[in-house]
Image 1 (cartoon, rainbow, N blue to C red):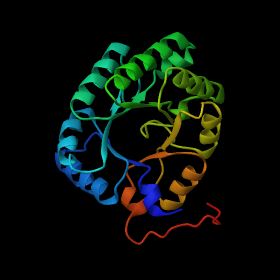
Image 2 (tube, rainbow, N blue to C red; image 1 turned 60 degrees about the vertical axis):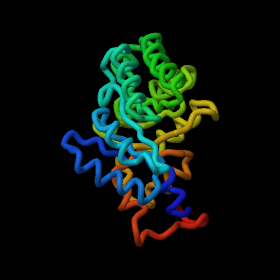
Image 3 (tube, rainbow, N blue to C red; image 1 turned 120 degrees about the vertical axis):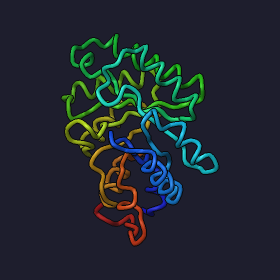
Image 4 (cartoon, one colour; image 1 turned 180 degrees about the vertical axis):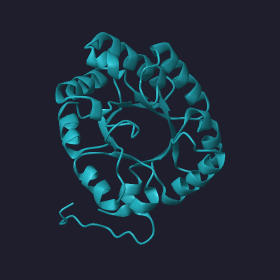
Length: 229
């Protein structure tokens, strides 16, 4: 698999609490150089990133209800509105994990649908973050099916800030739990090209990582279709 294909799947993450304006400038330059799908920045950096990348093919994405998903639905919708106004075209939303584990599926559905509807009416897409490290398989399946029902564009494994990140077994389960119209995004712990290829071959079309240079940087070789990866 060619490294340019992998690069085109990457959502380059700049989400650490101490990421400053200069960090965003540097990471936007990396995102532009490698032609990644998007750069995922904190909500307060959306406007700045959009300005830096206005003449590039790189989209600006941001996080909603991050990292725990516990803000109210009204707050998430307000976050979504402002992010889109500031230049984000993709939103990675954390579902309400506690409500899911409480089996309050009506709440979870309303929460996701409210953000999805707000985003879609403004031309943005939504990736729903499950935080798979905190869920058993039953809850992962439930989260995927609710996300699909609400019209989410992607389901995503993890924030990368709470327990383990992406796992290939979770990708298989998630892929089997949504319709073909829903994409799969792996995020958290993807550090090298071999891992990225493995997740792509498992069915992911987006990869969340801050290790873009390590994955697709100069000197990284392609892995052909006959590889074990």
